[in-house]
Image (tube, rainbow, N blue to C red; front, side, top):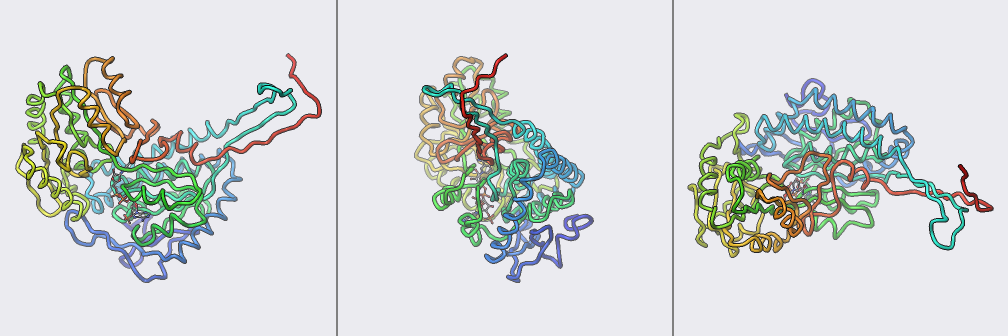
Length: 496
Ligand code: NAP
């Protein structure tokens, strides 16, 4: 159960504590932030509302701890990460329970998220040992006008304090996708978890604590992003920001100082379906891609662009599968569970109503109870409807019928987003041409968009982000290059 057993230190009374200096602490604010269970719509947990003074102290601790950590051998850093990964996996059940209660993630998927996170941490340790164990040796005579009088040794060094801010939908996985690379690269960490998902993150942090990381190296401050977010992201003690979320990321990137930014933001992933596509495969991928975790995934299929000649057949196949989706509470492992908040449900409803008013075909009756919205396929969507462009982050998938490949590519590229996209066809030559033409960070051929496996490069173009994630890219992003140049008094050429 949450907050019990090895996790009993992380709670006092009914409020979970924040973590800094290797200790669990209560905030001097005396205030807490309620986490509302999306299913019951009542308060499930409470976390500390940390103050600006506490953030200042956390930054100071992180800065001091990082100096020591940078002097810790790489293999020892890796060893601790492997230990944390094992502890996290061992305690997957209580952490998964938090995900079920805080963000209504289906129970089975919640366990998968925690296990995947443990694997990600271990992979970071292994990849870090490999890529940070290598540097470069350059000689000067390759550049015109130079003799071989200079030897340049360059290696990757840490940035300092990394601020990690994950979103609600994969709070544990998207936190460790920042924590693992940051730590193996010799950085310290300040984590600001999403409010919905904070308690799962605090449990995850306790797993790092139990693994025995040095005091102050990992810190976790809680509070509403709208209240402490600006103070954190503009804090002079921060040397790197790794953020995953929505439009907030655009605002952060405008306010942040001269620090490296990694931004993973929203998406409107298009699924282009050609006439020769295997429609059963497409339908299965629309269901998986569009409705998994009730559509609350950055890489969800958010618009289907299907050739008119096969549209009827595809819509029929998808509808048959939608009818089989189990709708209900996350505890029962339902496919469609309540969306994260009432405001989110209201937003989704607004998109549905707009589409209705403008003449979209509702393949199912629109149904909502509290935050639970039944899965909905909207056919005959047109570009004047909001759902054609906006990210619903809910179980609604719009279908736009197209008459040419160019029309599909045009719609995809007219979006402000450019996260992923997918194309279904048996013609690999066409698939490659379409992939090249789509202005998105990744294009999947014959499968729905997906973030994983976690070591693949993952990036958004346009408003979907800055930089590239994936384990190797994140480790590299959280380092900078340092060179030492040895100047010889006379040219020297190494002889065989
Ligand atoms: P969000 O509202 O942008 O929140 C993301 C994080 O930012 C949360 O931890 C939030 O804390 C925090 N935050 C809020 N205001 C802040 C501020 N002023 N300064 C600093 N941090 C602040 O996003 P979300 O609703 O959690 O997640 C959904 C969005 O994330 C979607 O747009 C989705 O596409 C995107 N996403 C993208 C990816 C990707 O890899 N590209 C992956 C997953 C999700 P609070 O919870 O306390 O407000």
